[in-house]
Image (cartoon, rainbow, N blue to C red; front, side, top):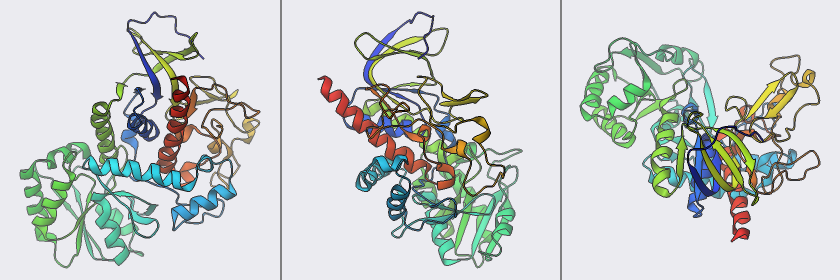
Length: 434
C-alpha cells in the first residue's frame, strides 16, 4: 500500500468502498446499496463512457478454435468445466443468471431496457460493416438484429459531418451477407460542420428535431422494411425518440453502434450517475484513490484526490474494480506487471519474454491478456499460495486473472457476475462485524 504525505481536509467513513466506475464498479455499487450496505464509490466516470452498451455474456469458446457460442448459458457451463480458474467458475450458473437479470431489471426500471433473445446470442451490425455476437442489446438496437436475421431490405442513414461512420462502408462490408442494404447520406437537422454523436442524441430528445429528421428520411424509404441510424436516438428519452421516428416513418427504426466513446456507453454512465446516489451510494466521482493504508481497527484508510485538497475515507471493506491497463488497475514495465493501488500479487507469465507469442494473431491469445489478480472463492485477492492477502478486500471485473474477456467476448457479463459475487462476499464479511 502507498501512503500519502498530505494531511486530509475532511473525513468520511463507510462500510464498503467501491473503487472504480467502469461496468464492474457501477454494478458493485448497485448491488451493494440493494443489500443496504453503507457504500462510497470513487473513480473517474469517463471510463464507462467507453462501454459499448452491449451486454456480452460469452461469445467464443474455446478461443483457440475461435468457436462461436450460440447459447451463452450453456457455453459458460462448458467454459467453467474447461477453465476452472476462470472468474466465472467462482460462481454457479444460477447466481450468474440472478446477477445478470437483476441489473437488466434496473435498466428496465430506469427507462433504458435491454432486449434479450429467446434463443441464444444474437448478432448486430458494427460501424465498420462487420457482425458482432452479443447477448442483450439496448432496445434501440433490437430491430437491427431482427432485420438482419430476416435479411430484410433496410435503409442505412448517415450524416454530413459525422466522422467514423459511413452507411456506404457498412453496406459494402456486408454486401455478401446482407445484400439488400440501401445507404444514403443526409444533413442532420440544424447540423453544420463536424457532428458529434452525443450532441446529435441530445438534440433528438427535442420532438421538433426528430420530426425534421423523419421528414428528411421519408423520401428515401421506397422498398425498405426498416431504417438503420447511427446510435443517436436520444440521450434521456430513447423510448420516445424511437417511437416518434417509427411513427413518423411507418417502419421499425434501429441504431447501429458508433465508434467509442459512443452514445450507448454515455447513456449507461448517466443512468448510473443519476440513479445510484438516490439509492444510497455516496459518490466521489471524478476523484481517484491516491493511497491506502490499514487502520488500527483492521479497516482501511483511503486518501482521495484531488491532491490539493485530499480527503480521507475510512472503510471496513473494499471492492477493487480498477480494471486492467486501460483503467490503470495494472501497470506493466520491464520488471513485470503490478497492481497499482494495494501492491497485490499479480498472476502473470514467468518473464517478459513470455508475455506475447511471436505471431500477433496467434489463436491462443497472448499470455499477458490473462494476467491479473487471482482470487479465492470469495473474490478476495490471493498470494502465490492461494491465501487471501486481506480478509476485507475483494476484487471484480477485468482486473481478475485467468480470463481473456476481449477474445472470449464476455466483458460485461464478467463485470456484472463478479461484482455480484464480490459484493455478496463483502456483505457476509460485514455481517460478522455487527
